[in-house]
Image (tube, rainbow, N blue to C red; front, top):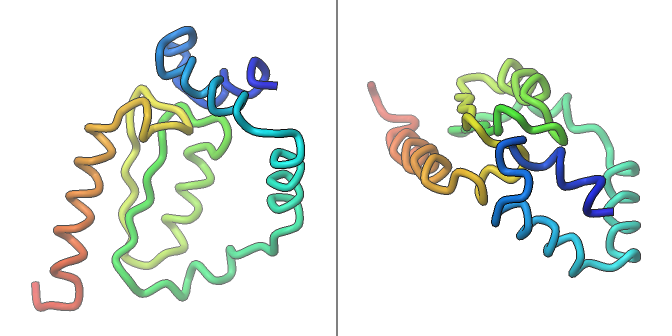
Length: 123
């Protein structure tokens, strides 16, 4: 299963890398029951798109440019619906951007924290 899933989780340049192997290890440590439960949860969860327009807090949407599991277009849709949100794309990264580009993700989180600290104050 890992050999089928992992290629879409990381940037193609990382296939065969230590990050890629770590993703495979993560998948291998799981069990079929856990995967089944995760898939059921994803298939059975109610849609939340209608709730996005009601979000009124600092919202940073982060996506790996090469994410094949939750593609950029989906994040752009969320960004369009959440008033005042920011969208940051992590380049050369897939779904596992925290593993692939941890420094870039940290930079985005720091930006968000600074932005959120000033939310609601006069600008």
